[in-house]
Image (cartoon, rainbow, N blue to C red):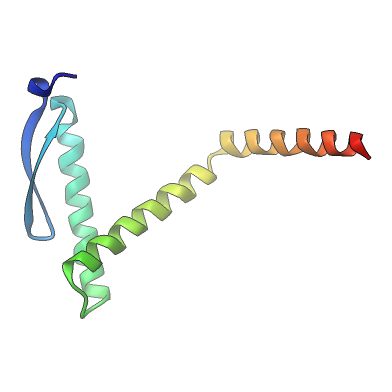
Length: 97
């Protein structure tokens, strides 16, 4: 995608404005994601007093990364593929005995 085809928007996260460039069709999803992230930062601020904004943003990022990793690991297709691989490895190792 060409640079001139990107849309420049301003989003607010934790009281700061960030100018980002996105595909026009992504604008609604990006704005929704930023809103959700900002709400999560506010939640962290309420739960853990005495931290600074960078700490709250980092905790929010770690929460999303952990959730994303768990979602990926709980994917039935992925579990099935991993079980199949483990079974093939076990069969190959048993043939070596």
